[in-house]
Image 1 (cartoon, rainbow, N blue to C red):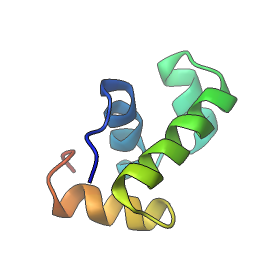
Image 2 (image 1 turned 60 degrees about the vertical axis):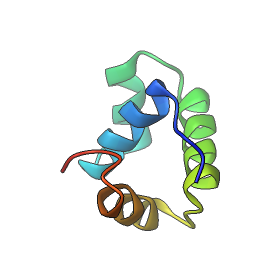
Image 3 (image 1 turned 45 degrees about the vertical axis):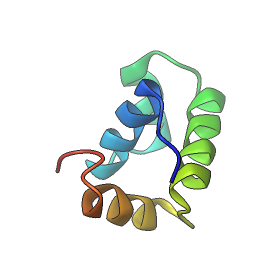
Length: 66
């Protein structure tokens, strides 16, 4: 599993808290397209198939807190 960047970790934390892409975009002050690119990178690095799988992997491996 590849190490996430600081920005990817912040976005993953927000996904764990149930935020959607628009909410993440507004809270991080980055475009929705950039959010989507980060999420794709997160999925690839974690080997996740979707958001729920990414949350499971993140919590199991203590990448982020609940």
